[in-house]
Length: 387
Ligand code: PEP
Ligand code: MN
View 1: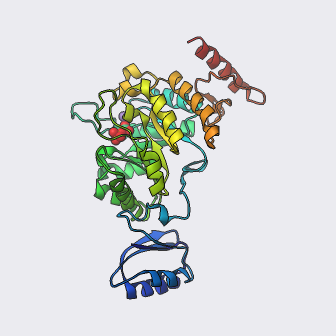
View 2: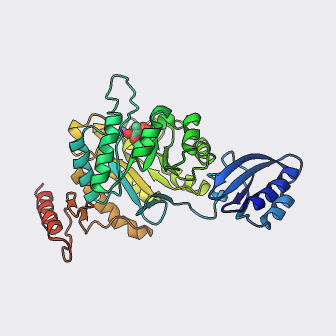
View 3: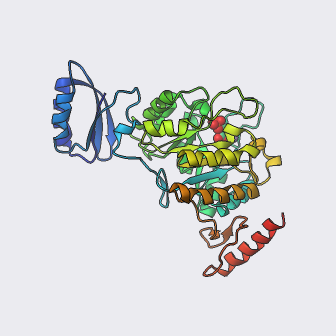
């Protein structure tokens, strides 16, 4: 396939390129790209190289690439470098920062989300996860609070300033989920739901999509699934590896660490890892998380519950806040060695009103902080060390 990217091109420039392309090839797709378009063309008769060369010199053309894989828009050759997806004003995934998204498997109540949000934010999480609509293996298990869960997420988002990530199960809740969250999660059960992926591609909000890899999906199929979103004109796709079927009795799924650099070699899109669903047991989560950082992932999606024993879903794999905090501390020591930044754990994090969040237990320097932050940091440190 020949890819011609005409980002921010004038209509006349696009027309000229398209006319030349059509005389040598079949235009397979026109993908909205900023103020311009990306054209995908396959050869109708003979070699595309000479026409590709001519098109590369035409005004308005940003990039021409020959891509031979089944996935095209997510392919590494489709972009000049790595793509970073902007989640909100202060947060992007795929840049230098190793971004940790944490929170419970399910939204269960306002107090549960508030307690967990404050704990994870205080420990360096940059966004909050929590499912309002839950895909459960048994129809008799807790299915999530639905719209009520979205309302809780909206409140906690406003109160803490944290970006929120939540799963979309089907088209019926698309509008409500799009209106509430900063990132729409597509779970492993919907990983190859092409009609849903097409809808996400066409979203006028271009809401970022965190696309999980299916449990029996190859990397090739995974990137083709990402292409379904990209082909609609939504360029904001974050890939998430969460393990596939395996033979081990020790973990819930099999996360092949090789998939991280292998995916990196194939795509320009950001890659995060979900160590919780891969491991299935909280004891193994920190080791998988650290391995993901070392192997080159751009961040984590990790399950944390303020009281895991009481969690309505995925209790066994949910970290409690103090263990999450310890894991973040270790990751913060590791990240600089690998040339990555990570949230600064030595400075208490405050909500938009200046109130401190989290159970800080590091020797935080307190000079220059608001008095309320200093007091909270001291109390939390004492509580944590006393544990
Ligand atoms: C989840 O993140 O809670 C979830 C259901 O994930 P997955 O789709 O990977 O099973
Ligand atoms: Mn879960």
